[in-house]
Image (cartoon, rainbow, N blue to C red; front, side, top):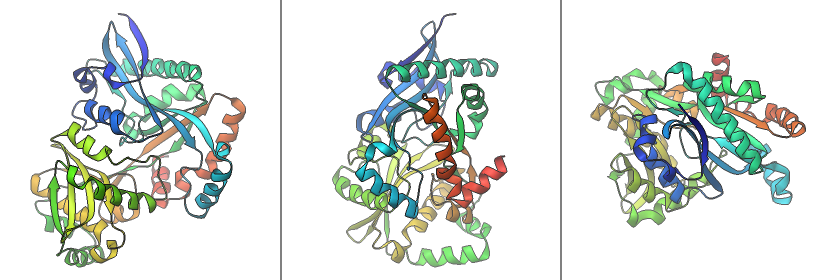
Length: 378
C-alpha cells in the first residue's frame, strides 16, 4: 500500500468514474466541476487535493484560490462603508485565499472511495490538509480556509484542523424542505393559517405567468444574464460573479438532470430558476428576477411554490433551496442544515488580527436564523 498526496490544477486529472464513486449520487459531480472550470466565475483558480493508493483514488476534496475580501459577510451600512474603503485601498481588505470547497457548490465536497473504512478517514483527511498547507506555502497563499463544511463532515474537519490552529465560524446553512405530502394542497395545509392565507393570495397574483421548463437556453442567454445581474445587484452577500455563458454551459454538462424554469409574462421573461433534479431531491441552484415586477407577481414566493408543487407531483421527497432568505424559508416549513467555515493565516500576527476581525463579521451577527442555529448546534 503506497499512499500519495497530490494537488492537481484540473479535474481532468481524474477519471469521471473514479471521482463520482467518491461522491455516489451527488448531483454536483465530476461534470459539474468540469463545467465550473470551463465557464465558471472569473477571479478563481481551481485545484483538487487528493490521496491515491497505488494510483487508485481513495480521497478527494475540491479546492479554489482567489483574492478574498474580508468584508464579504458584511451587510447594510457597514458593507457600504467598506466598499468605499476598498475602492480607495483595495489591498487593505483583500488577502490571497486558498480554500477547500467551491464558490459555486452547495457544500464543501469531501469524498472517499466506498471501500475506505470510517476509521481510516481522519488520517487521510489530515494528509490532505498537510498537502494543501505545503502547496499553499509554495504558491504564496497566506490564508487557508474551508468553505461550507456540512455538519455531517464537521467532526472530520475539526479533528484535522483544530490541532493546526484553525478558527471555526458559522457558514451559510442549507435550507431543506421535506415533502411527505400527497398533494400540493396538503403542503399548504401544513403551514400556519396566516402563512397559508398569504400564499393563496400570492398564487392569485401568478395567474398571468406562464412557466416553461427548458434544458437549453441559448436563445435567451442575454435575458437570463440580465435577470441574474438584477439579483446580484439586490444581494448583500455575493462571493462570486457568474458570467453569461455559465448557465448554458452547466446545462450542457449536467444534462438531463439540470434544467431552467423560465417565467413569462406575455412575451417578456420576468424570472428564471436553474435547478438540478435527482430522484431524491430538487436543488434550487440559481434564480434571477425582474425586480420591477417582483411585488406585482410575488415572483420569489411563487417560484418557491412552483418548485414545491413540481416535487410533490413527481414524488421528489426533498426540496433544497439554497443559502439565503432564511426567515421566509423557515416560515414555509424549511429546516436549516448547518455549514461551517474554518480559516488560518500562515503569519501568526495576521492570524491573530483575523481572529479579532472574525468576531465582528461572522454571519450570526447579521442573521437571526443563523444565530439560532449556532445556539442549537452549540
